[in-house]
Image (tube, rainbow, N blue to C red; front, side, top):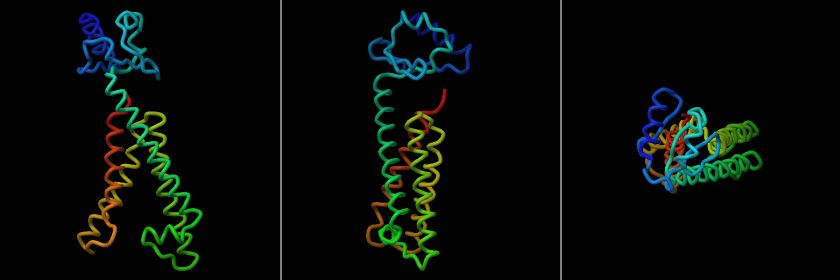
Length: 190
C-alpha cells in the first residue's frame, strides 16, 4: 500500500489537476476516494486500474462526513433564507416591522419588498447552489453579503449604541459567514 501512495503522489506531481492529500491514512478502510462525483472506499487494487484523470482528490471518511454535514447546514440555511425572502415578498409590512423597518407609502412598501427579497434570495440561491453542486466559489457571494451586513451592524453598535434584541441577528450573520467561508475553503475545485 505504501508503494501505491508513492505512485499516486508521483502521478499527482505530473498532473497538476490531481491532488493527493498528505493526510491520506495508511489504513485502506478509513480512506475515501472521489471518482467522478461519487465517493468510494479506497481500494489499492482498484486505484491501479484508474488513470490519474479519473480521480480528483482523497479524503478520509471523517472529512467526507464533515463535508456532508456542512452541505446539509448550508442547504438548511438556504431554505430558511428563501422563506424569509418569501415573507418579505408577500407581507412586507409585518416582516419590515420585525426587522425594524417602517414603510412610508407605496414607495416604502415597494422598496422593502424588492430590496429585502432580493437580498435574501440571492444569499439563499448562492448557498443552495454551493451546497448542491459542491461549488465553493459561489459561497463567497453569501459570505460577502452577510459579512457586509455584520460589519454595518458593528458600526451601528459603535455609533448608535445597543438596542433590544441586537445580539441574535449578529450571531446568525456571523454563523452564516463562517459556514460559507468554511464551505468555500473545503469545497473548492481541485
